[in-house]
Length: 257
Image (cartoon, rainbow, N blue to C red):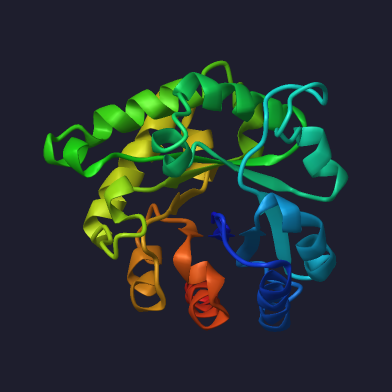
């Protein structure tokens, strides 16, 4: 059985104080030993060490929202994977739609980061997903194929114990819209079949595929109960303990059932 992963992407939000309080609230509620659910928070870069200090030794891990594909050197404003592992980061989100569409990252850019992060021992959460116009044009699967093919180009099967896929329909991020459980399941089923075709049935069966797109306490149970949905990449709701904790609890309840 694939272990659920519930990851909070704080994006460019919180202060040091509010982020610390948020992390403390999560640590107080998430069991240190939580075999059914892996819990992760991804704060902004300036707060990684302070949040890391709060969650150290708890049932909550911490990761980054981005990295650079080169070794440490003269790259002003960038963050090397070696720096992330040095402070205890265990994961990094790559290919998020906001970086693709606002910051113009290409699949080739993302692929370089994926390979560098994997080489550094980080867990990679690779985000893929379509725009509303692409869904309306019946291009969802074509977009997912392009993004998966580009993002994982040259990635060996042996690296998949470090890889998580996150399906994030762009039209459902920060809009209040959410994919129906059937829509989410169809996309996740396509991604699992893609992994089977391109890699192996074993990798397809073992790889976790998260749903990201306006996950909230009132829809988490139904989304997470889908056969091919293995967790959630949560944006806005991860900034409020009273919203994020029930999502974690929904996953824990399903894992125990």
